[in-house]
Amino acid sequence: MDIRDIAAKSGYGVGTVSRVINDQPNVSDRARERILAVMAELGYEPNSNARYLKMRSQTPVAVFVMGVGNRMFDDILGPLQAALAREDEQIVVTYLNGDVDEVRAAIDYQQARHPKGMVFLGGELESFRASFHEIETPSVLVTADASQLGFANLSSVTIDNVAAARSAVGHLLERGHRRIGIVGGNRASGQIGELRLRGAEQALREHGIELDYERDFEPCDFIEVGGYEATTCLLERTGDLTAVFALGDVVAFGALRAIVDRGLSVPGDISLIGFDDTAFSQYAVPRITTIRQDAARLAERAAKLLLSALRDGSPATHELVDFELVERESVCSL
Image 1 (cartoon, rainbow, N blue to C red):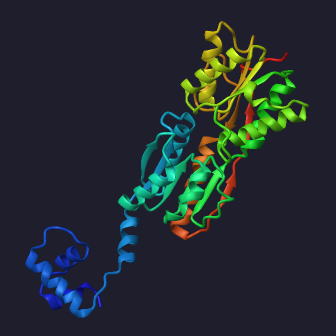
Image 2: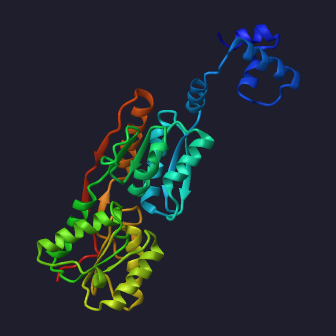
Image 3: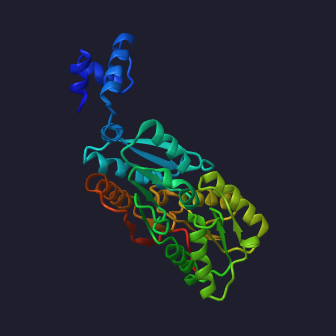
């Protein structure tokens, strides 16, 4: 039995029956009452799952960007949109402030818009662990590793943040630096900042140095003003630093300005190394030595994973993309 049987029995057209089933306007009260009565008489129950799938197939992919002004995510967003557009998939982008629970926001969005898929640029693993089971659509988390969460519809693509941070601090150590300050992120378990701090600790420990968090680390959001304020606090507290490791390039841009505003130079007085290799890093003065995350590659793989899940029903996949230490002008040897 389908809506054609309801139409024939009720005496109304298929279009009118469809509008009643889907609770749409432009149907008279008389017609609605008659059609509902026929549905009850015949025991007809609409296939809500089929309607949901049809609706979902016509909706764009939802992309949630953690943090307004995060240049790394901006670098990923353009190639991601282009990769999906080549496959006739459109996106709708939602920017979320850093204090917003991105998974709860996605759940609300799912209930209102029924996106066919979701991409998260950044995110806190604890939020996913707590609430992602309510997300029904294929999803991809970019720049964080979701492999330990075990969700069948959540893939991820990222770099090895621990190894990359170990490489960054190792570079400073190889250049003779022993008093290294760190700015950016925080120590919350599983977050990007915590992973990068773990790598920094490993590099320092390999050289017999224990990271003193009270003296040599200052947390901040991944924005320029955060880097500026954190570096100012760090330099006021610790006067013997010869190098600063910023856990993101946007933090490094703020750190660079804070160092200069104190009458110091980079790298003459303090060496500076960043993380991400955002588009502006090579245009700073001096050009920033940094860890390169390949934004285009991350975007390409994220799009591929999402499309595979949407079109082929592929299971969740977790990929690591290579990173690279890019040496420029902001680190000198002692």
